[in-house]
Amino acid sequence: MRNILFKRMRLISVTIFVMGTITASLAYAIDYTRRPNGFAITSRQVHTPVDGAPVLVADIERYQKSDGSWRLTTTYYNPDGTIRKVDNGFGQLGRGVFQVNEKATHLNFISPMSPRAHVVSASDLRKDPNFVREDSVLGYKTFVSRQEEEDGAYTEVYRAPALQGMPIKIVFSSEAGTTVIEPINIALGEPSNTVFTAMPDYQVNYEVFENKIQAVEESGKQETAKQMRQELQNIKSKQ
Image (cartoon, rainbow, N blue to C red; front, side):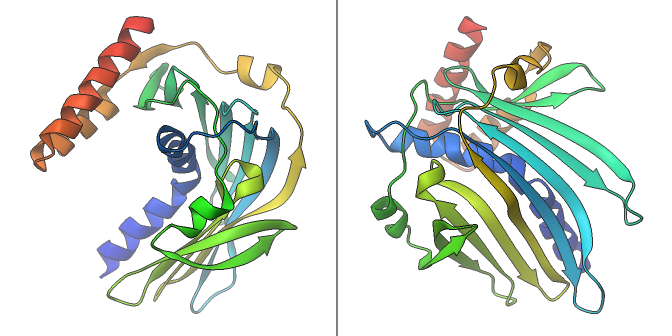
């Protein structure tokens, strides 16, 4: 049980980065002509154990352009409040989603990203089979989806149509406690280009995505794996 909980908490610790991939995936399936808003969002990740006080896990800064491009900086903390590490990632339309590996000085390619910006509507979020209710986060209307586990643990994701359908809040609850990732400030407006040009132009490493393709193929989804390989080849030819 402890191993299961540890894996879940590790999953939550990288959820904010994965949000970028979620947004990229939505862009493949949804096509709208209305131009979305650009914005900056500062979030905080806090874990409250069942028998203890809340603990600050991370601070997250995300800059989202109206064309769908984004940059993410996550600062993780030790239990004593000192900084444990800082992670950076970004998504560029037509190029892909990347995680910056400063130690190895390369960019980990995470996934492709649609070459066009899209807007996610309220009606589409209601169609989510896990949709349970509407809510409000810092004044923004959100649509909450809920995923429950057999052991009673659950994850709730709050997506905001006004913010490109972004999951702006996540609540994960288990017998170990509750982890909440939620915004403390949201500012509408196109982020400065300097935010994005500050990202390093390292050599790209495709190993992470190639491993995903292999896993998909081993699961029996041959056609999906084939499409992913074609996408990867197209992206490599443009780098």
